Length: 114
Length: 108
Image (cartoon, rainbow over all chains, first blue to last red; front, side, top):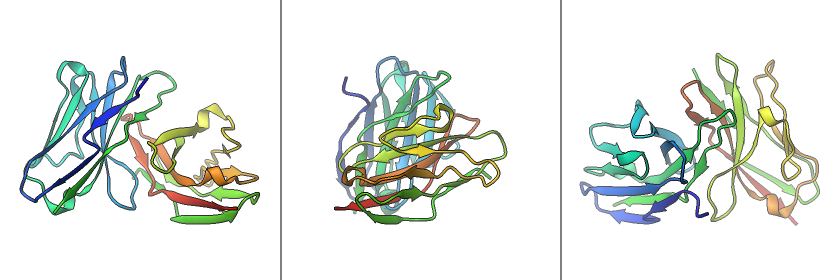
């Protein structure tokens, strides 16, 4: 199994441009997470989905960030317009909520805003 | 406040030496703690969780509620243990809160 698949792996854009990231979670996983990891830091949660419902988006900068998870499977995270400070690795993870919840991470998308 | 602290950014040891990666947490409830590892050019993956009380790749971690710590230990480090290690806390909202990570370098 491929695990959590993210694309693109790398993206370089100019500031003020829009950008979108895509995530395909592990089949059957109802919970999907988007994390942002700044250089030298641990991942920080942006948004968490249970199926197609965003149940925790308190850390998502809603003025420029948006996310969707149509049909409760794939998800996209968008930034419009991008700022220099958005340069980071964006990680997607998925899990099947049971007693032993384990989050499986994708390879991440490294965004560079110039 | 919910917080995970990893005080060391870098830990360097020689092969065969004992390793202890420190993790302290701040959480008002009953914590569920994890160690995640990221090897070079690989994705972040779960190493172990405190509720399993298991040893993975020779690593163990014991939850000490009195000291609010969850240090990761291995008696004899191997070169293949070189990686970034993240301690994480599962909050009530099913949100994983990560520390800043410790890079472990094991020299031959």
